[in-house]
Image 1 (cartoon, rainbow, N blue to C red):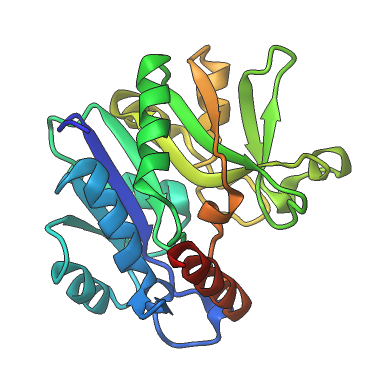
Image 2: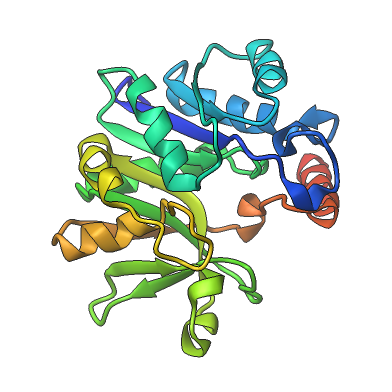
Length: 248
């Protein structure tokens, strides 16, 4: 990818369900902290055009990353949601960046080829927002992807806010996006905390863009294993198993 693409990695959370006082992204998968896997993948796509949002144990997280890559940092002092994290990061992106990929520091199996494909699809279609989605048999716990009658992406509904019909949808939000920087700058200030968690959801940029008549699309990934998020000890074991199988 060229210098027009920047990457924001969300890595500020503690991860209370990990039952540990260690920041979530510092938990290891195959002998390396999760964040290390994600940063190395991001560097294949965007070089040093990367901003990592840090919060809990920021210095320890930076210490891990600084050994492997040259990146920028944004501090999210209070964890007020994914939308707030991106708000913190946006000013730290290089001025040359026109399109922004947003990754999660707790999704260690994502491949650079998948990100490249998402960015290519996003730029070729001249979209404001492109979401990476995957189809899963059990979507429990994930945000559901809502399509309109023309098949356009109209919204993402979090599990806590979903009705019974929406909960049956099997295409889920991976939390991975490609977004025009210009669109982010106008959409982020419009985000609110009017939801079950009282947080600033990044997912709401989909609905904002759709209502404004923007070009909002979805790119379906081939492999749902790539976007397994680590929120618990069980998830950590699963990610480890999947990564070992990939290396065999």
